[in-house]
Each structure stands twice: as C-alpha cells, then as structure tokens.
Amino acid sequence: GPLKLLCEAVEENREVIISLRNNHKMYANVKAFDKHCNILIYNIKEVWSEKNWENKTHVSKERYIGQAFLRGDNIIMIVKCP
Image 1: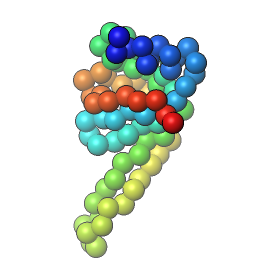
Image 2 (image 1 turned 180 degrees about the vertical axis):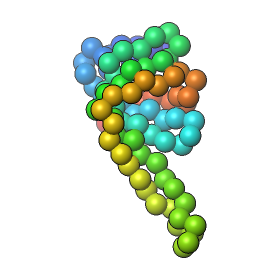
Image 3 (image 1 turned 45 degrees about the vertical axis):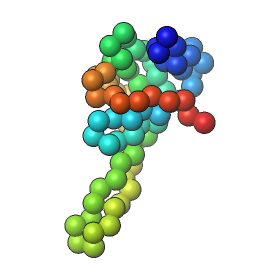
C-alpha cells in the first residue's frame, strides 16, 4: 500500500523528500509514522523560497533541524531521495 515507502525508509534508514502545504520541502530520515501519515523525522534540511520585496526576486532559504513531528494533514507528497 501507500505506506510501504515509509516502512522501507524506516527499515533501510533512507532519506525522503517531504513536500508540505506551506511550499516548504524537507529532506529527512523517518524514525516513525502512523496510519494518518503523522511522521517523526530527524536529520532534517528544510528548504523554501521567500520573495524579496525590494528587488522582487525569490531568495532560496534553508535551515537544519535535529528532530521534528509532522502532522499528516500538512503533508502533500513523500518521495524517496535519489
């Protein structure tokens, strides 16, 4: 089923890309999950784009987070990292 990707990510310690509703993307390892797609992740690199109002350009931003819990209703898509 659709949760097989998450099972494999936990068992094989593989990194996944998680696309969120706020247009942020998270590159992370999955520690645990449930049937609602609530996910406990770690070693997170969060990437997003912000608009610079002065010169009207988009600036790519990123930050690193040690561990986080994502509620399933904020998740749009999860894919394996290439």
